[in-house]
Amino acid sequence: MASYHARSSSCPSIAHPVVDQFDQHLSRLRSSQAASTSSSLYQTLTNLKNLYCCVDELLQLPLNQQAVSQNRPSKWVEEVLDGSLRLLDMCTTSRDVLVQSKECLQDIQSVLRRRSSGELNINNEIAQYLNTRKSARKMIKKCLKNTIKETNQTTTEDASIKSALKEVEAVTLDIFKSVLSYIGGAKLESQKSKWSLVNKLMHQGGDKEAKSTNSEFDVVDATLESIICQKNKNGVNMLQVENMRCQMVKLESEIQVLDETLDSLFRHLVKTRATILNLLSN
Image (cartoon, helix red, strand yellow):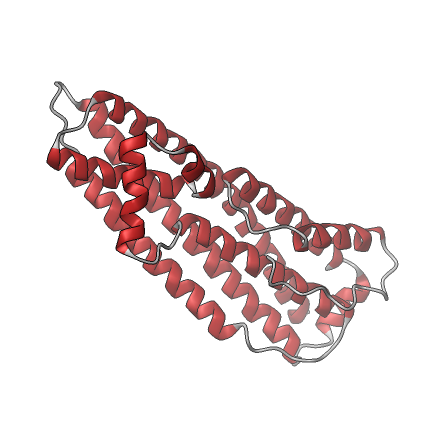
C-alpha cells in the first residue's frame, strides 16, 4: 500500500454526497499500511468493499454514465475493463489457494480425530499440506509476475470518472498483493533462515515475537515442518499435538473468514465490470 501515489484530482465536476464518501474511503485505504495480521487484513478488505459500494453509486450518476457510454472506443475504458479482469484473477487465485490449504488442514485434523492409540502417523498428510503450500506460492508468484507485466500500460487522458476508476483499480491491486503475500507467508531467503524459525518453535513451543511478525500460515507451516523433523528423531508428545491442533483450528477459522470476505468482494468486482459493460452496450 505504501507504493501507491496520491492522486492529483478527484471528481470535481460532480456535486454529489457520494463523491465525499468515495474520497474518504479512498483516503483511508491509501493511508493504510500493508496488512500484517488477519484482523488488519479483514478490516482492509471490508473498507475496500465500502469503496466499491461508492463506485457502484458513482456509476449510477447520469454524468458518469454519459462519460463512459460516450467513450466506447476510448483507451482508458479498455484499460479499466482489462484491469477488472486482472483484479478478478487475483481474487480467484487468492480464494483457490485458501480452499486448497483448508482442505489439507481438514485432512490432518481428520486423522488426528481418528487415532485410536498413542501411535500417531500423520507424515503423509503433513507432507501433502506442505506440498500444497509450495504449489500455492508458485501460483502466487506467477499471478504477481503477470500483474507487474500488465500494469505498466497506462494513458494520460483525464476524466473524473476515469480518474476514480483508475484509482480504485490501483488501490485494489495493492490490497490484493497484500492478501496474496499474507497467504503465501514470509518468503525466507535461505534454507538456514527457514530452519531457524522451525527450531524456535521446536525448542520454545512457539516464540511470541515470531508469531506476531509472521502470518498464521507461517506459524502452521513451521510447526508442521518441526513435527516431521522431531518425529523422525524423538517422536511427538501429546502436548505438541494439541498445540498443533489449536494452531490449525485457528488458521482454518481465519481462512473461512478471508474466503467469505473475498467472495463478497468478488461479487462487487463483477458488478462493477457488468455495469460498465452495460453502459457501453446502450
